[in-house]
Length: 342
Image (tube, rainbow, N blue to C red; front, side):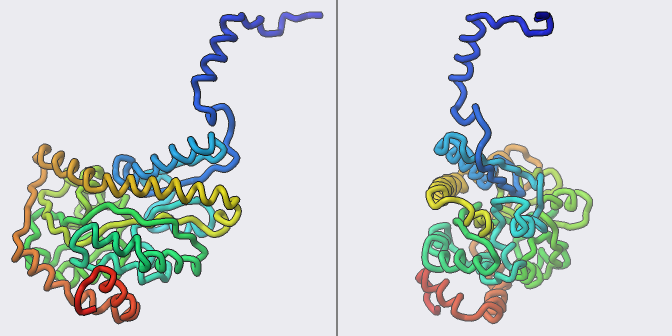
């Protein structure tokens, strides 16, 4: 029999070496996952959202020994702000973590509570909402859109940027300010005398560079990781609004999983979100330090009277939202935060 076409025999040393190399790999690296979850988001990997997605992927794959895999697609590689929710509803992706502003676009305007300017004094006030009955009611309401809400997490508070300091209401007059697709945020900008321009997050830096818009609002971590400091001369530390996210999946996928897998994913995600909440302030502090060191952008701290004048200028925005979603949501919100006048 002609055996010239066969590969040469493998030596014992090479065979043992291959076995040792395989043994050094994680168990799940030796086979394909039974289930692969596609997790799409629009920000950089080194932001709280990006790091939470990576932590979730690592924990799920470790705990299932690779039986469930997670593919993370950051920086709007698959879908951007305007189409990620539709992609989720259609089953084109399995998990997304949109900012809470996005839910208003799918007929869930009650989520715009989180967009109200100067509502939260600190993150502990936010957590009284997201971890309490109001937050659970919001997540449960997603069922009417064919979605399953899995949890909330933070990216801290937003700051205003432009090519001039934004310290008083008059400083905003006639500026074209990029905003998310949120009626509350658009109303906030109009109350300050600015013109809101709705753009996807992934398009914001290019729009700033091209002069399509004059300024925007972001937590410092997003401002820094998207290199907005290269095209914005001034950042004003207004801390006027909260930016948070909800992780959601679609009901078809969720119901296709076994009860034990749903429990594992839910528990693992909660650990990843707790991790994200713990690092949100740290990432923003690091970004602010890096921004100051870069020296490309002047950083302004508002005085208490300046911040109060901004707060008073946007006060009508809260009344308008209450009329749109009903006073019961506002009452529940203020009661949860222990504020008088609820």
